[in-house]
Length: 112
Length: 111
Image (cartoon, rainbow over all chains, first blue to last red; front, side, top):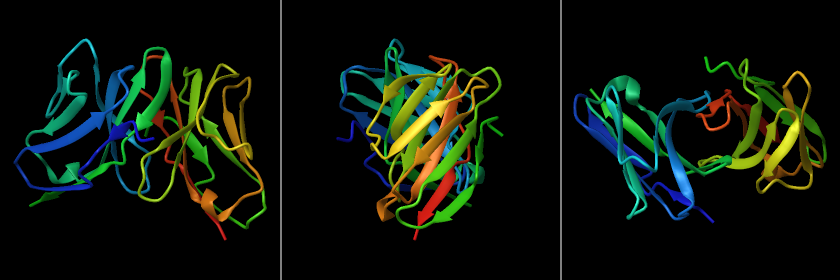
């Protein structure tokens, strides 16, 4: 049962433009959400997170938005750079339940 | 470099065999997590250890077991291997409540 879903397997964006990645979840007990970035032959690297008490968190070029009523979050990357080309995973966990549930990932390709 | 070390990077073995995957967490992290990533899928949680004690189990097969040692390194043991066990196995470590940091994984290939 996939509790975290990333419905877009891939995204292609021009360098300098905005990348928007989407993620939906079904478990209402999730209260902590994270985005990870993964390059080939490497492990996932933590990018940004958001707690359910917030609806937005920003870190440099990366902003995560959380819509609890819709059980939806998104990651905005502005401006997109060639080094952002990677697989992005959305993940979620519940209070005192530290295991992460992952989406299947979205492959982002930034075109020059 | 996440600070989490996994060995070996690659493992090729045959069906029916047993293997051990090793993970050294970041300095100071008491929690170790194991995840399995099959082809083109997201990571699936297997098991969580905190300071030597098992804290949570996911959909981990009975053929799989893990432990965390007093020096906090962890081992994942996979036995009676089947073709379907071929996957990437990731270890992560963290301080509870903080983001998990992942190693580069062990790629297990069953022939």
